[in-house]
Image (cartoon, rainbow, N blue to C red; front, side, top):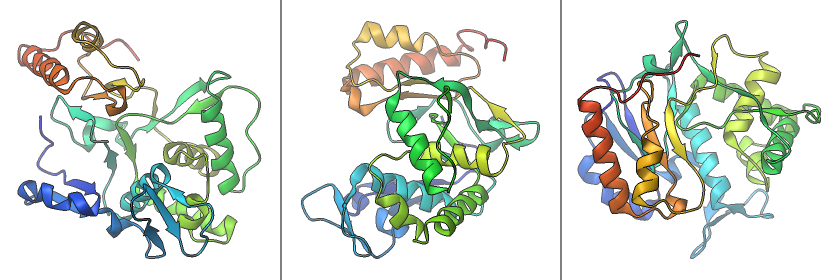
Length: 273
């Protein structure tokens, strides 16, 4: 399924992989080297998935954190009504545009109240890190909202504001302040900034509009079929984490089955909000 004609597709890949995407570049599709979105003082360490920050060499910036820096930098660089973040293991199943994620005429802000509970200690650390970067008090002991979604919609102007806020509080470049963190989530930072600094969003939703599987456990054909049987008439995408190790051929067959079913109409009706 493709995007509507007013949507640009920006693909960000490591320098060594840039050549593999040249055939699909053109029109509304743009391919970027990760280096376009990282400051020059961040240098890739040879033979390892880490980066060294010349302004603060220790600790090194792990690949997972560098990836999040790229997302923040890229989103902040665009002049658009919204940026939809999608990892490479996500597939669109219906035509999608910014309007697909609007509520009351505004881009919807994903917020799942109370979803970060005691069984998600890493999520709480991400909240703590985000609040520290923004100069906010530590989070309360109660359950916290979750802001992590697949796909994830951001407003570029808000991203620019939160990066400026991080720099104002830490006295460092935002890439240095965030890159030095051991526990960090870019989506939690965005959410905490919107809720705690901007005072919340006018339009919020607790629906991702997708089927998402993020466990690091392989799914067999029957499990895939059961998972995708839950696709509703509102779902726009499917994400099966590459870390699950699910067989590629099984995934392709399952996706083909979904597309075939959608061609005959939505499999089930969406549940009420």
